[in-house]
Length: 107
Ligand SMILES: [Zn+2]
Image 1 (cartoon, rainbow, N blue to C red):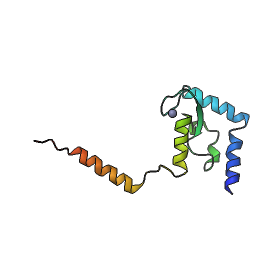
Image 2: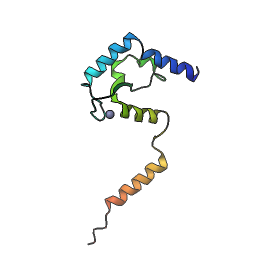
Image 3: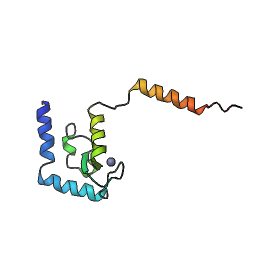
Image 4: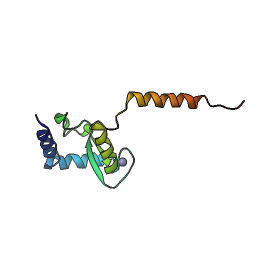
């Protein structure tokens, strides 16, 4: 299955009347706010497990979450491989943390 077919599949999910119902259910459940930052504008419904890889979860409420445009864009970036934790970077961060844990108190 090619990329174009995947895209068409996803578009098919978010266009039908069945999606409208699921979208409203997700918004109601999440209190009409982004689950990550609490934003109440520009809300979008995100598939926790992408339709691309989990088409069977397309209409499962547990697989849906309310996100604002910004958080949704961030998640999409991570899904396409950008912003994923990189081992070298993680090692550097933990080194920094260990240095902060042993501050020079001057005593
Ligand atoms: Zn948000």
